Length: 174
Image 1: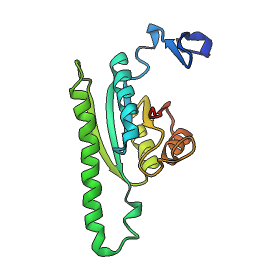
Image 2 (image 1 turned 180 degrees about the vertical axis):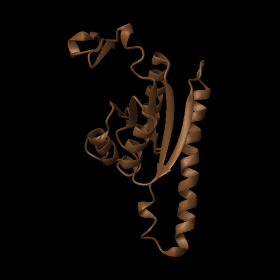
Image 3 (image 1 turned 135 degrees about the vertical axis):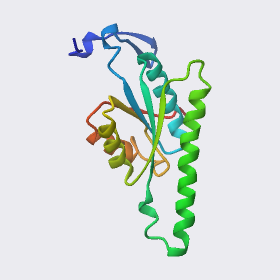
Image 4 (image 1 turned 60 degrees about the vertical axis):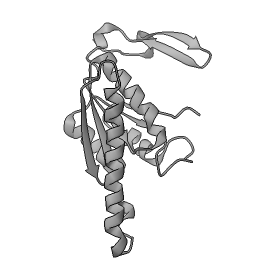
């Protein structure tokens, strides 16, 4: 049985600005594999927390994905490229390590896999979701290159528009 409309979900208002949805038990296998895309920015930390909580509730596996965007490296002078690539590699390690550490601090850590890809972030995120047959993807609404974007960062917007599975976008609380 699948949910056909929002009315199939029971919901209550927990505060003036927040609704709590009570998901029926028959949807417990709805999310078996969830990708959380990270760029290591401060705004993604809440998305990681939400993803780990979602995974715990659905007994899902989380794939932490970092995409190294080298599009800004090619125009640089030759002598700077290796240094910038090394800095990007270090940044990817730090971002993935932060998620691993966050998971390890949980009372019951969830199953976590990590991956790093190189290329255009939105394209790589959607490709990874397809490659592992994920059931959903979560990400922050703004990343390193879009701290001042209007509603959604450009990567998040592209993923929402092109991803074949549900996308959970999580904004950083002020």
